[in-house]
Each structure stands twice: as structure tokens, then as C-alpha cells.
Amino acid sequence: MKRYVSLEEISDGRLYGGNDMVKADCHGCKGCHKCCTGMGNSVILDPFDIYRLQQGVGKSLPALLGEEMLELGVTNGVILPSMKMTGAEERCAFLDEGGRCSIHAWRPGVCRLFPLGRFYENGDFKYFLQVGECQEKKRAKVKVSKWIDTPNQARNHTFICQWHSVISAVEEKAAGEEDLEEAKRLNTLLLQTFYMQAYETDRDFYGQFEERLTRWREASELETEVS
Image 1 (cartoon, one colour):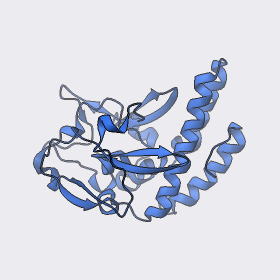
Image 2 (cartoon, helix red, strand yellow; image 1 turned 60 degrees about the vertical axis):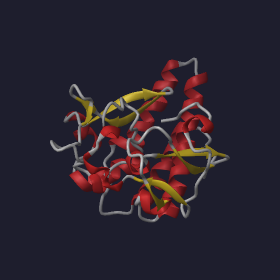
Image 3 (cartoon, one colour; image 1 turned 90 degrees about the vertical axis):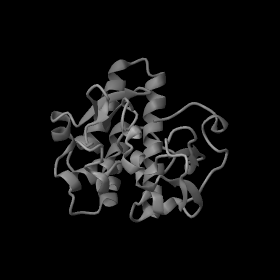
């Protein structure tokens, strides 16, 4: 989810690369799950998140929506899936009874980042450390790439830039689009192309994403900044 605030307001004022050390290690959270509650629809899922969830729980997005583990919401004019918060505590639907993540090995990118965030600029991004978000006050230093814990991070970095460009193009079109039917068409196309059609979990994700990205560009007729 995009936040329209200055870095000075929400961070330590620094930007980090994958090889930098940052005070993000929460020591296994020690039973705390504060960041897994009350998040509304802010834990938005990208296509790689859906692919990982399919690998981990063996269910596609339509199935997870039907079981109310995920939900669809509108963010900046774009319809996207997110983790569903449930109950009086508004807990993530994937928390177990002990308050631990039941899909930790396949958790979404937003969860892997926390308490880091991404700062996008000129078709690329770096990381920043959010202050005041994590309840652990004595976090240890850890290399950013180790904290994110995602294989093939160079390729993943390219994917994230590509996906951000796609979403930004749809947001821009939706914001200035007087034709509501066209905005609806683009949202439907986005969901069908990148989310609703199940991924082949025995195949490399990035190749499948590139195939879908090509179809998306042809059908949407939108230009994106990153090829």
C-alpha cells in the first residue's frame, strides 16, 4: 500500500539496499503478533505472493477468497487481493490459536518486509525502516536480503519494479478515467490475467509472470515504465 507521507515522518531517514545492515530483526517476535492485527486491507498481495500461497496451501486465489482467508478491496482505484482480518481483534486469518503465522514459509512480501518498507523512485526502489510500527524496541541488525528471505532476489527485484509499474499505470488511468466501464475493464483484466488464473507451481514463477505481462500489455494498451 502506498503512503503519501515524507520519509522523515515515518523512517529513520535512511534508504537501504539489499546488502546493507538494518535494525529490523525482531528476535522471532517472542509471541507478539501486533503487526498481524488491525491492518485492514493494507497487506496487499502481488502475483508472486499468490504463487507462493498456492505452493504452500495448495489453493488458488478463488478458493482462498471463498474460504474468507483473503479478500478483494479497492486501493487507489485498483481492485487487489489482501490478507483478511477477522474477529474482534481483527487478526489475520492465517494466525493460529497461539498467535503464530501458519504460513510463515509462504508469507507475503509485505510481511517479509516488516518493519521495512519500499521507497520507489525512477523505476527502481530501495528500502526504508519504519519507526514506531514494530513493538520490539531492541531489534538487532540484520542484512536486508537475509531479512526478506526470498530466493533469487535480483530477479525478484526486477519483478517488483515491473509490478509497481503495472499498478501505477492502472492507478493513473483510473484516476483520470471518466469512462467507468473502461476502468472496470482494466480492473477485471488485471485480476483475470495475474490473479484468478492459477499458476503452475512446478514451474518458475517469473517465466509465467513474463508471459502474462506480455498478454496484459497487449490487452490493456497501457504503457509501463519498466520492461
